Amino acid sequence: MSADGTGAGTPAARGLVVAIDGPSGSGKSSVSRAVAQRLGTAYLDTGAMYRAATWWCLEENVDLADHNAVAAAVDVMPLVMGIDPAAPTVHVDGTDVGEAIRTTEISTAVSAVATNLAVRAELRRLQRVIIAAESSASSESADASFSGGRGIVAEGRDITTVVAPDADVRILLTASEEARLARRSLEVHGAADAAAVEATKDQVLRRDRDDATVSQFHVAADGVVTVDSSDLDFEQTIQAVLDVVEQVMATAATTPDAVTEGEGTAR
Image (cartoon, rainbow, N blue to C red; front, side, top):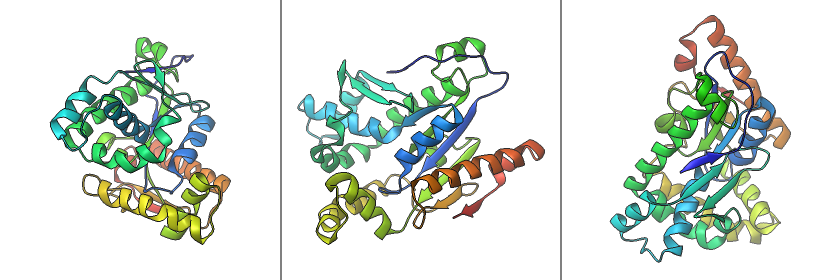
């Protein structure tokens, strides 16, 4: 697996790593993309990797209930993640699956793959490879990375606690259940009325419930700043996250250990 894209510039120090966790409908994907664009970094949607793995297993006629078979299929999955925040892409075996992995079929099946511990171990390994490449201070690594070593915004379920617990900035982006369901209903059905919300409810809450068995994304771990977007619009949420990045990095500049020791809540 690899990350494609081109970058420019050689950093003088380690690039910025921003890790963002959150439940379904919290806005973490769209917000993380926008934050990455404004920071001039790469962007990694780890949830898309699990969706791609699900697509691949179904394409290969792998029984999702067969944990060993699923793990074996994912081990050889020819996955390429495009990490340009302006136009992120997902290719499997040369096929652009960006739209296919967002279908209801994949959304319904993805938890069976995402809760497979062997799959999680492999995809976490690949995620760390991408994060390391984008944040490396090595001129050789930076030249080969999308961001030129400036860094990356990585989002998903367990980025702040398992994949990148040493990230410079760690954020839990959350929102009330009502707000999350309304947002996902608009995304999936184009409406947020009672019928649309009800049609979306099971998918969103079941996915969060299933994934919560293997990762923690509802409560901020020590050192993780919570941004509650329940009462914020899209632009306000982006700014809230950027404010946290600025605050944490400013604190780190004067107190080196503060990045890993600090915690708080932004709203």
